[in-house]
Length: 351
Image 1 (cartoon, rainbow, N blue to C red):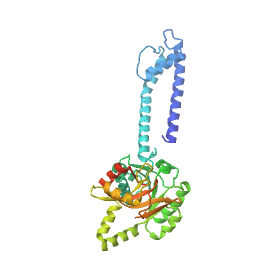
Image 2: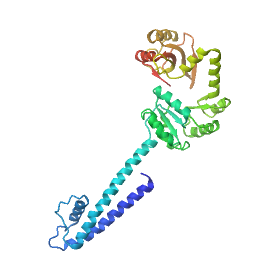
Image 3: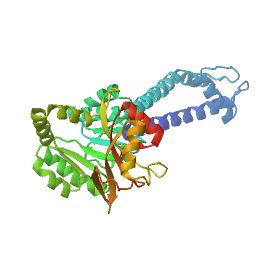
Image 4: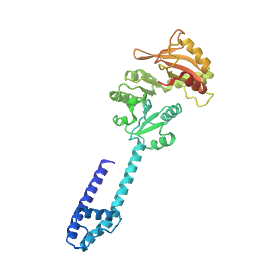
């Protein structure tokens, strides 16, 4: 309930209590002197008030004086207003709760999720791909008209939506920003994205940030500003187009690999974390390659390892490289291979 409304409700309740208090005091003074009166104490007067307001009407405490009965009429008819006030406040409270939930003001408990700042058609395609891959997403938008669409299109357990100004960094805590895996800054132009990265890193310097750029020449500028990953839309499009021109089959496969495999026959390139309990720990890369192919029909072609705080990618490394806990394996597989991989090696997907 908002501040002005709350103050108005409190003021109304105080006034009602004062009016009833005065009327009860007058009623008690009037009834005390009557020989047949049953309202002779404060408790009796309060009991009569409750009987009247609730329309129970037991009849065990009734005013005997003329003016006492007039006050009884006031109690009786005012009960309709009291009921209306209570029902109205309950309805208002429920509406406020529903609105807060819809706008995301109640917050989310998502962890390890993706936060997307800004909503547009491109952001929608990204969210759809992430949801299909089983990732939870929190979307921050200042376009209220898009909220109903997001709620209708995606399940609440997969996509959380927050209606907020992007620069209200305190409000961004509603999307559990500190526990997110990465923040995708999806604003309108490169300049706006750069300024936003600089500002948000003042509050959250340790998070991972990713942007898509219209101008690929700004990659270095964004990296210096603290952006973890920068992707040039034009660069990717031009490379894919060139590939379609001179090696179309490779282009088709490449486009399939960078997307989520929806069908069982489709292939996907995935990255998996190696935990301490995984049987691949301590195994030579060459042996892991053949075991994965034989047992799960999965092709291993890369390994990522943290080296001095930085991620180092080994592309099809030498066979004597040993897999360690905390490494990431990059593999090619179909949907069936993914299921076999999870059952046999208990590998966790994703960064």
